[in-house]
Structures are given as C-alpha cells and as structure tokens.
Image (cartoon, rainbow, N blue to C red):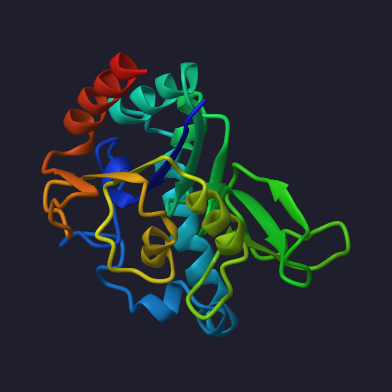
Length: 227
C-alpha cells in the first residue's frame, strides 16, 4: 500500500468559514501578532490572549468540514494516509481522517502553563482562574511564535517515506513547516493545490491552481482510479 502524506494550511479551513492569518481581513487585523501569539504577549496581557483564542474556538464549533476534508478521508480506503496540518482546528478529524499531526497545536485542547505535556480536551472558553490538576493556569494548546514545534521531527520522518505528497491551501512561506517539502524523496510525486500556488510545475511537482474544495475532490478521484 502506497504512502500518501497530506500537508494542509489555512486555505483548506478558510473554505469552511474559518478566518485565516494571511487574508487581508484575517485574524491578525487589529492585533500585533506578538500580542496574541507569543509567550511574552500572554505574560503581559493574558486576558487579551485568552479572549482572542476563545473567539476562535467558538467559531470553530460552528463550522463543518468541507468537500476537501471529506475527500481526503476517502484516500484511506486504498492508501496509507498521514495528514500533517498547520491548522489548529479539528476539521480533518471530524471528516474522518485518522492519522492527523497538528504542527501548531490544537484549539480544542488546553495545557498547563507549567507543563507543556499536561494537555486536556477543552471546548469551553479558557478564563483566568481555570487551573490544571496541579493548580497552574491553563493556556491554549497552541504553538506560539518563539516556541519550539515539537511535532516537526515526526512530521519530517513521515514525509521522507511518502510516495505521494499533497500540499493543500498553504503559501509554503511559513517556516519551519514550509521546509517539510525538502524531506520528500526524488521519487515522491508532489501535487500542489492552491488558487495562488507558490510553486511551479516540473517533472516532480504538479500544480493545480484551484481552491481546495474544487481541486482536492478531483485529485482524490484521480488517485483512487489509479490504485
């Protein structure tokens, strides 16, 4: 069974109605990114940071997986599929994808400010005074600017073993996640799906200049017909 690795970014979630960081009207509007997405910002104004993510969490609970998420799950019928996402939502899981790695954390989880490994499921607002079992303040389970990306080495190992790599809805401009493509072997077939792709087609890369809900179902149908 061939290995397919899927690398997704904000573009796939945007089509479900989630705001993205890179759009003109994206989530950073009105906020310096370090105010709401850094350890220093949390230390200086934890109420602002918690409210920022509380709003995002509420919005996430109101949206659903789209056609692209659902199509990707179908690949698991005939391929060994791993999904590596830069997104902090759970739309891949809700669509039925089983092997999902979140590089930048998960919005529906919280963790202790004193222990990054103390992670719990959390769908409500996080407020000042919400504590972990050891009585430390909870924070969003999100990788902030300046923090390590603990899942990156595991993701790189998975990409190394890919026979087919699908890159969907990402600018491929944000590191270290963008560097994952460099771990793909020369034999790996790469498909890049994005309305404004940052790559060009060559002998190894096929660019599909479509939004995810159009390009992904069509590609999945093609891949399933070949297998």
